[in-house]
Figure 1: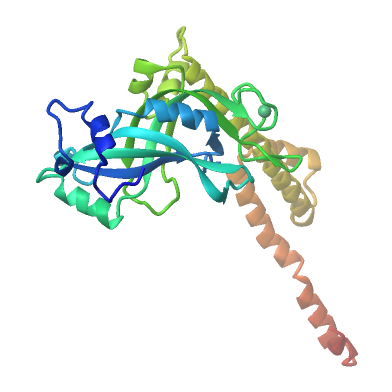
Figure 2 (figure 1 turned 60 degrees about the vertical axis):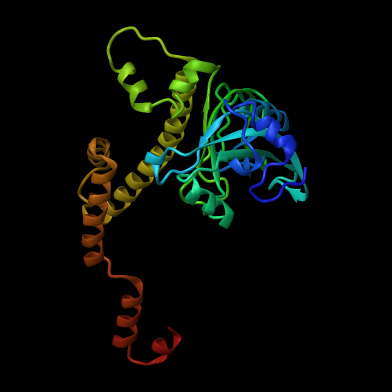
Length: 323
Ligand SMILES: [Zn+2]
């Protein structure tokens, strides 16, 4: 469909007028195009599948979006009246898959208050859009299970393959809006997961980790939604990973403290030192190592100095030249 900038084609006007009480004419509406989302792997290591994009294309028709974030009072809202998934010729996703995107047509009534926003659209200032939607499944790229049920971690590589989640079966598309800073590609894509409808709308900002924590520590019987469970599992996995790394770092600090202690406090038995270090936090261990380091330097001057001293105190200059 060939469309002039801002103008709605006659067949588009028919679609737009499904949403209006009184039929609008061409001069009454400003129509524009937006790319809602694509099938590229995003910064959360998630991507929509082709069929998810198709389904979102159905769900987004009729949904209004906040058109003007800066001037909330003016409450500008644009409405999507048609969507289609397009395959972009000669463009591939980062992993070589055919690049697809969900392309939408939206309109805003031409009024005095929408003038400035329309001018921004015309000048191309407003380009990036974020979307809020719910999906039923997030499939792990490594094992094909739901990522909340397997042990793979998004963003990690397994045998050279990147782990990411494919978002499948969208159940709701409840918002879209222009993002204030259009610098990043697909900046601020908002997604939340779960099963559907009204409940999802309430949680469009995603499950709050603090709310889950409150429930966990409330000290009484609690029930968790599927979405909260997913959030818990993902938090658990992240913490587990961090714990492994923390333990590795702690062991390294203890080994370092022990080897320095052998220099600065040789009379201290290893057993005693082990008991001391067991009690210390990582920060305290770090402090101990720094203190040991200062002492060790007094006792064992750094090697180049030793070298020079030897050379200078030697009777011939050969050592000097050999440095
Ligand atoms: Zn997996």
